[in-house]
Image 1 (cartoon, rainbow, N blue to C red):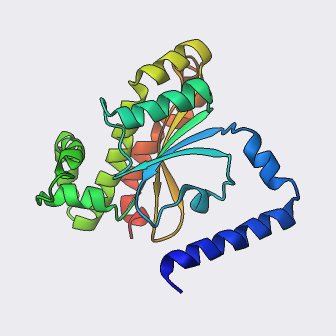
Image 2: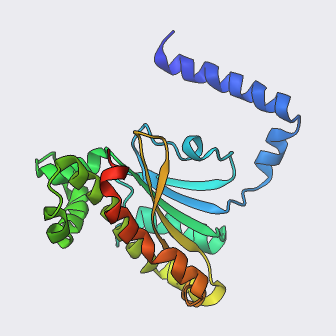
Length: 226
């Protein structure tokens, strides 16, 4: 059996499993989508949004690219964000990076890879911005992990500056923005940063929940990256 044939066979098995679970599963699935989440993740084959969160079809609107980037001026990601937050009205937008990210590693190496260099330069900008902090981390692998986290943080900041998110924040006090990192070594997801809409962010509960996250990650770095 050829590799692609296995995928088609597994699809048939999945369909049968869903029908056994519920006779009208596909009737319900085909009616409409009302996801609560927009997931912006990495294209890495090891990091499937539904697989690592246990989400079912219809629960997440998903966009993936190299190193989970939200690049200002990129019509692809901006169109996805606009549709998700303004039309689908998702409650939460998640940027999920992962340790051992090939895109981040390539940007750190500085090697010329061709067309993708024009994309990876955005990660290089993050590295330059936080170079002083990164220089304080003696271990190469821990430094690599930290840049993965900082890259996620910067993409959340980029999201917060998009016209779609700012409009929805002003008019509907949604969505919340979440920056996560998936740990391939443990299977667990670490929260890096969370931004609430400005009105909600003024509440003491939101402030207490959001502000210590990055400091805690930095302090716990040897434990988290072992």
